[in-house]
Amino acid sequence: MFDQLTERFERFIRNLRGQGKLTEANVRETVREVRKILLEADVSLKAAKAFIEGVQEKSLGRKVLDSVTPGQQMVKVIHDELAAFLGGDAEPLRFGKSPSPILIAGLNGSGKTTTCAKLALWLRKRGRRPLLVAADTRRPAAVDQLVTLGAEIGVPVFTGDRRDPVKIAAAAREHAREKSLDCYIIDSAGRMHVDDELMRELKDLQNVVKPPETLLVVDGMTGQDAVRSTQTFGDRIELTGLVLTKLDGDARGGAALSIRWVTGRPIKFVGVGEKPGDLEPFHPERMAGRILGLGDVVTLVEKAQAAVDQNAARKTAEKLARLEFTLEDFREQLVQLKKMGPLESLLGMIPGMRGQLKGLRIEDSQIKVAQAIIDSMTAQERSTPRIIDGSRRRRIAAGSGRSVQEVNRLLNQFQQMKKMFKRFGRHKGRFPAGFPGMPGSGIN
Image 1: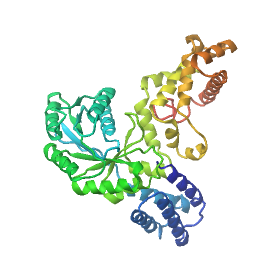
Image 2: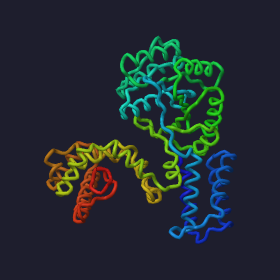
Image 3: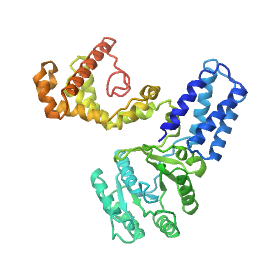
Image 4: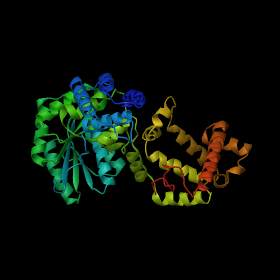
């Protein structure tokens, strides 16, 4: 979603870093350019004005440190102001007495039901015992959708009588207590627009279950409509936070950028894809770094730690140290990488990488192709690739449904990787930073 915004900021920052002196004139020129970038990205006029006023106030009269250039210092001012603009510190979920309720609200089409399942999976991975509650009795198939999603992620779903949302929520609390579940996520009814009936139902649910968290799911693709609907919900019910969905879409991103400032409600999670695991806690400082093209190494490492099998990674590291890395090990690394999310998104978290990737189309399907080719090999071929001659390559290509050229390309890439590891292995066993589980990667 922020790709266009990031491109503009990256281009602007490259020019800004060339400034040799921080003066009132170039500060004013900087904030004019920032204002233009924000308005083109669909940030509201009031929000953009407040942002540039903050940047200008913090820049003018500031002493330039000896260790940085004026341009670098200006970049830091913009980064810090953007982080504050997005909410400052990350706000974690609040929990009450077990079982603690989480009420999820939102308009139809915002991704509300899917977000309930994503949140349940996120909580389960962190040691919680969640229950999904199907209290959306108005949208056709909403209950069945939640039941299907619950089965997919291994989280129980309570449906109740499928008629009265308030009674369903109250019964779900007792059910969660009986089953020793420590939290329950209520998927409330949505509408195509905000109306009095919807608000009454949400107020009734809040009065009955008294949730420490009432999260509004907002479709980030709807632009300023997302800001307006959040304000309307916030005026009628007590909202504790937002979940911004479809952050992987191609909207301009300005509404998502200004929604925290305009509504005063913190963004607690963002949806970054369609899979059940594509939900991330919102960290304003990290998001500011991504938007400015400065990367987000912390989130990248967290994704690696969550996805990588530590025992398998340790064994792979030992094999690499002995230069015994095989195609089977290569396949395992591809599987681990795929678990971390879209490849292009991961590479974009590495500082300075976005510019190098410009114009280069990175398809996650390439990982699937490599897996298919390796899966079409025999165990002997995977462990000893040098025996793969022309006839074997034709057989592997036919078995995987790929071309002989693609098989050749994969084998060449594998050999180049082995040479690289051999070269790094001579330097005190240090391997490229960021390679999951490898010595020196910070993910051991």
